[in-house]
Amino acid sequence: MNEQFGSCRIELAQGDITAQQVDAIVNAANSRLAGGGGVDGAIHRAAGPKLMEETFTKFPDGCQTGSAVATSAGRLSVKFIFHAVGPIWRGGVAGEADLLASAYRRCLELAVDHSCRSIAFPALSTGAYGYPMDLAAERSLSTVREFLLEQKQPELVRFVLFDGGSFGAFARALEAMSE
Ligand code: ADP
Image (tube, rainbow, N blue to C red):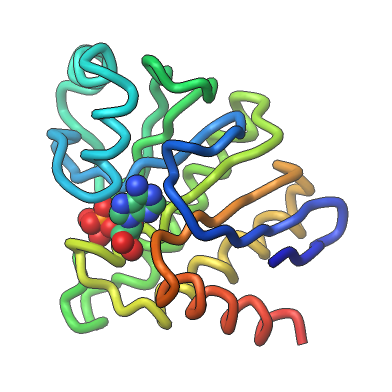
């Protein structure tokens, strides 16, 4: 499913973030950048041990929630990995929506800074961090749309949803947004 916003496109795909042929993929990291399960585990397994070495060397203090940092991509064929730290869901009263938006925005800024024309995101915060899928879909998509309309880059933003449930939630939210 695709939606055009000016000269840019948001694309929804179901699959594995590590299999994407784009300039940059986004990792759902934790604030210590310490590795974990879910997307993070899959990315580190696919990229190999050099990725963790680089991450610790470059960012020994980790990364704040709502922000992101860039590394190279080890064995993966993409040019960069942006490690984004989304918020842990605490019922919606702890600024989660703003922190989620900020994590997406920071990745898009990194994409522009690193001359990336295409970037793929997983659904940040919706796994171990417990952010409700429908709310995350709405906030994530509206944040990306706003950025694309303002900045007119990167050309392609792909959301890679892991299963049918998350794909459906993002598809409904994208459809509602473009009405
Ligand atoms: P967080 O800690 O930010 O919640 P997770 O990695 O636990 O991050 O999950 C984020 C989302 O990514 C979840 O919806 C999960 O189902 C999905 N996911 C898990 N593995 C992959 C993968 N290899 N590619 C894309 N999405 C994935």
